[in-house]
Amino acid sequence: MMVGLGIVHEVRGDEKKLVDTVPVDYVVSTIIVATAFNMKKPKLSIYHSAITDRNPFVMGKIKDLVVKYWNENVVKNKFEKASLCYSVNEWKIRISKMKRLPV
Image 1 (cartoon, rainbow, N blue to C red):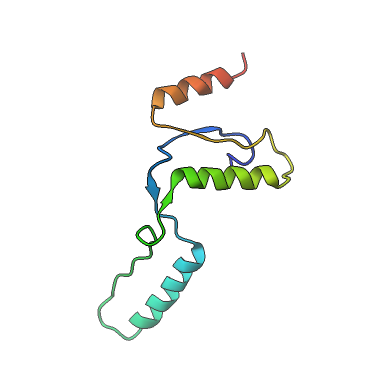
Image 2 (cartoon, helix red, strand yellow):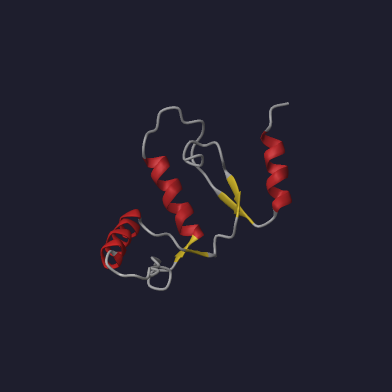
């Protein structure tokens, strides 16, 4: 949301890295099914919900989708146009934040 409102423009990360994003409906479905299966069992089973191996998703794609959505949809109280840059260099991020501070 901070990116969409134009408040944050740079974060630490590598846009080539894989991320495991799981839609909330998958998580909820897993919880419901796991609860039903474990209701009468004396021992608790562990379930894992992930999609990276079937549908790899890189951080750069998330950036593109988030920026596109926020720039195509009108939002009240928007500070600037949404943009995002990943940086693996922490010092570069600190310096760019200092440049934006009012003097």
